[in-house]
Length: 243
Image (cartoon, rainbow, N blue to C red; front, side, top):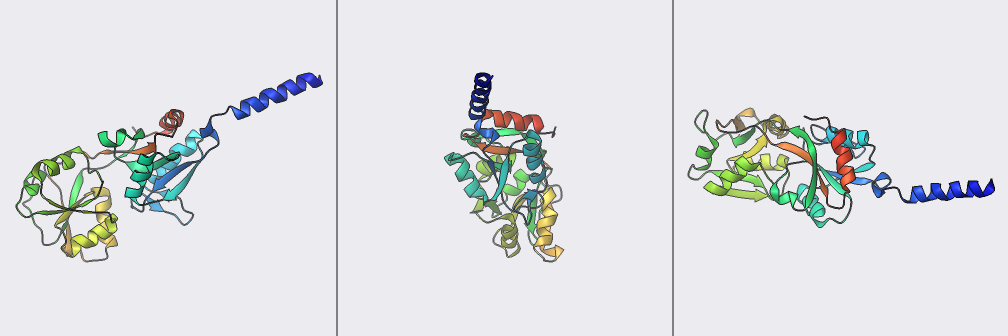
């Protein structure tokens, strides 16, 4: 009987040692301060349009994770470096990023992008984005290493308007628009009203441009480093409820 008990203990120990690493090792989940997508909480976690479904997916999949606040460019650099089991909440999937990162199923889809414009910059009603970008002297403010989706990215690449790139967060970009450093920036309509209100200025200093040719918004995903096992991605996909 003692020998049988020892065999059972040995088998149990072997099973414990052979468990996949993802079952015990926490995934680092990056986010940046970007309401209403990612809203920081006092305990270091995040909620919001992409924060909440990201956390829900990890929890429902039974995968341990820890939130970590980090600027967007550093998130990209860290995941591209592939130095650990790391993911980031709410990113667009692009061909370039797919070369160095893994993506889950979509967790959210934006509404059509709009232009958050300085009050002094006016365009014709129902103007097309391609017309606005082709306007002589138009100045666009964009985040460095950021994708605004294939439609906007493609038109900027084709029409080559003057673009000022910045690494600052959207809240500071709004201030740059307000003081006239650029004419407009692109945002999802979900966050446009929040950004203008957060700037604490009069509504006459900003206005939204809804472009006649703008397609439906892009889907957002959980983006992970290559070190994250495929089994983790599969379990997250089974837990994600967004259709």
